[in-house]
Image (cartoon, rainbow, N blue to C red; front, side):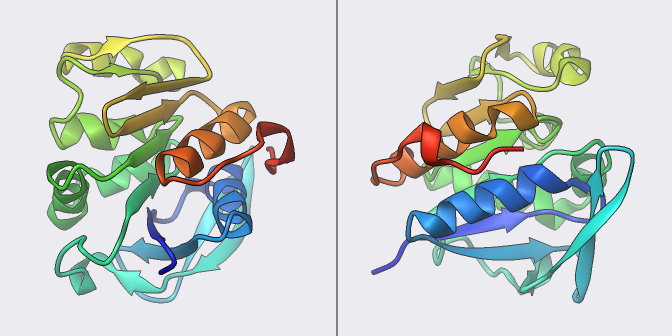
Length: 185
């Protein structure tokens, strides 16, 4: 049976951090589902302006539990995780994946959601530099490296880390991956 990855995002997601890992997962044979706060489409942020939109396949309120999914992907972008961490159901979904021991992959600003869900205490994580103090204050051991894996958590710093980030998630899901074959920012 095909493994399924939920992508939790909203308006202002960093375009490359949703689109490229999504493509890498699909190219590796995984099914992806974009979940957001509202139906319709959400718009990405591409460097200095609004970018492309993606179709929302389910809303957070339509997710009864995470049992139908094998992993959670959290793209960054400054606006995206800041908005999501204010939504109780979005934060609850992150916690549910953790309680189930399923992989959670968060890149750039997305580890804010991990901190909001109280998942980083005692964990080694990485992120975009501007939120590292927040992660430290939440009890994380913060490192500056391409990918940090600790238990079920996979974190990366920035769009340039997407190949390594995608590879880590694909391998956590039990498939083999060639970092050089991954779509990059």
